[in-house]
Image (cartoon, rainbow, N blue to C red; front, side, top):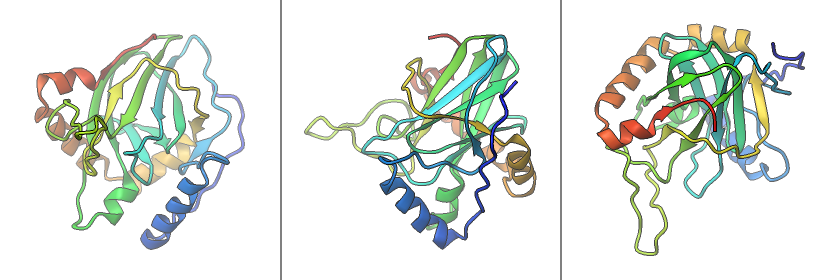
Length: 218
């Protein structure tokens, strides 16, 4: 069970205001991590329960906004913002995750909806870890693209959730599941995002499909 925590109520801003607020929050991240909507602290899960951890480490290729994560059957898992970790209690066993960035969807010109899929397994008492990745991912597959100086080239519309056993030590947050579930049902378009994520997965090559698999332990 999650220990009691104080809910952080984050009002949903307008599209224009969201972009400006997120830019300001990203600039201030060195002082304190910016929390995506419905992130709670502290995040603790009993060791006999399934644990899912999704980290967003800041790189030269990180995007704005935050990533929303649900299961492929529409169960809200939580949000993760730059330089934080989403830590969630989930039932042990096989799981499919669908993820998208609501802010980037709202601000994209022309308007686009983009969702990704990750497949894995969660074990009791062992964290199943993933990472939000941008710079080392391409939309058509899992092969990094590099410039002549050896640095990863950023693909602004291409990202994924990849399996990653590393524990980055970022601030971990739990989720206001009730508020997130309500938002998902009323505004999150879970069926659309699940359908797009499955289509995205079908276009991946074998290497990329391996990268979006994850497991417990590590």
